[in-house]
Image 1 (cartoon, rainbow, N blue to C red):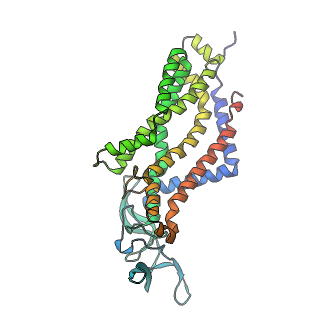
Image 2: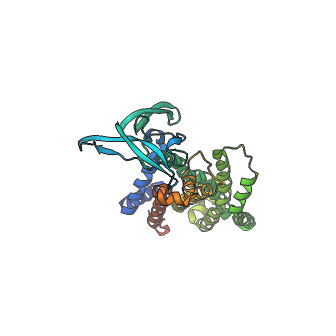
Image 3: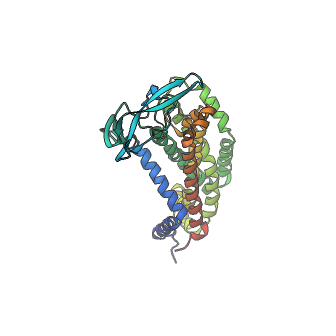
Amino acid sequence: MATIEAPSAKAVVGLRKTAMKKLWRDPVARIALIVLALFYIAAFFADLLTPYSMHFNDPDLANAPPTTVHFYDESHKFCGPFVYSVERAFDPTTFQQTYTENKSKPYPVKFLIPGEEYKLLGFIPMNLHLFGVEPPARLFLIGSDINGRDNFSRLFYGAQKSLTIGFLGLFIAFPIGIIYGGVAGFAGGMVDNVMMRIAEAIMSIPSFYLLIALAAILPPEMTSSQRFALITVILSFISWAGLARVIRGMVLSIREEEFVQAAAAIGLPEFQNIIRHVLPQTASFIIVSATLQVPNFILSESGLSFIGLGIQQPDASWGNMLKAALDNVNDLLNQPWLIAPGILIFITILCFNSIGDVLRDVLDPRMQGTG
């Protein structure tokens, strides 16, 4: 009597390798992967790559324009990148602040320059920054905010929260949704009906109003990071229900396969059967779903911070940086570089969606079952 087995691990690994090769060969997906890799590297090494810390500020240079980097001195002689210190003045006629360069002394842009101390990777004490200038000059590549903080540096620190929040949500929501949907689909009958009614009840909870209620009852002494971590956990425990419904539908079909029935016939416990034979067959869908779900969490973080429910100042996130820029429309019209966080959010979402679309094509369910 022939033994019926699940698709071999070698075949599954081969399919994954083929999918990755096709993903890399696609020019749009390749660019998206490179851009995302650069974003995450920048966020991971933000302390080293930026000239200033997240909380550094110079009140005398609030709302300063981008620092002009010069390469030629007054005699038009090339002397490398340098800047001048900037002085602020108030025009009583126009009621506007003006910034003028003090050209009495140039300050060269230095690389691997000592500056504010930090801990690289959280435990290596360092004070080197990739580039910077010596005080009193400042190097604000895309200007400063209303508190005199460097917008360029804060983009990197904001990325640490805005980019990692998506994966934090996945680590909570996806295991719950996968296991819950797998058990419901494999068990079937009354168990399936009850579990799906619970999932549908959770899906019906209006997350936006729930977050508003949470923001009202959370203790005021909580830090913005603690507050948003709690909100993220709650959002994750709500968002798993949609995934569970899809996994349940896939499992209802997979459980009828001969290799699953054979495993049950020889006495393999149901839960082990689900983990070993059923859920691995949904891996392709889970991978695609993950790439498409991460942008939802990033947008949620940005949206919540934008309306004041997420990361709070002085901590940086792309959402609250964009909110600060849009608080004063007149400043935004005069300082268009302040919308840089919104541009980065757009690029990140576009990259994730591009990768998800390509993965959806190369991991088409009709390709599975070969080998």
